[in-house]
Length: 169
Image (cartoon, rainbow, N blue to C red; front, side, top):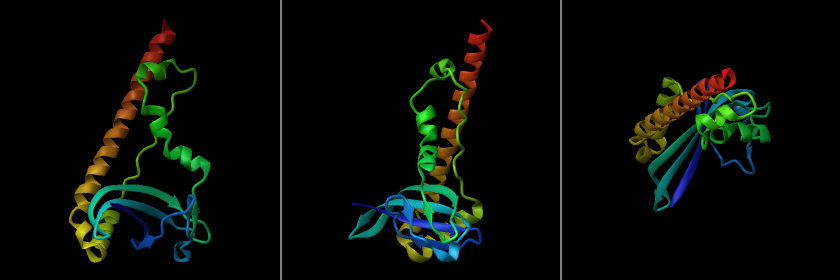
């Protein structure tokens, strides 16, 4: 069976475990009002209803409202899937033929070294079973995100070259 854990890491490197958002609404954390936070979503396997193996870690960065809450809007939902819809199932040739400006890929959210160290330290204290696996899973996810972003940029560059050839002919 699997589980999910949500954490916020604030600018002052304080980790706050938060409840699962319900209907895209995050429960307010008043102590984090108006702060930018790094959201960490961890997906793990469980044994005896306890975390046993970390599978995936995702990161997002956003500013909480005046109450310390956050609501994911339709715009933010579309933005989250922008790269997938724009670059996930297309070729440079198809992009070049589109009758609109080429979209640029949105860069991935990458935690700072201090944010990573804070996450590792928190997990070592609270979830020691996951702590040993976390650095490898995090670095693999970061490398995957960077490589995917690089591929999206290359796709746009190739599409632009093809488009320039088509328009100059």
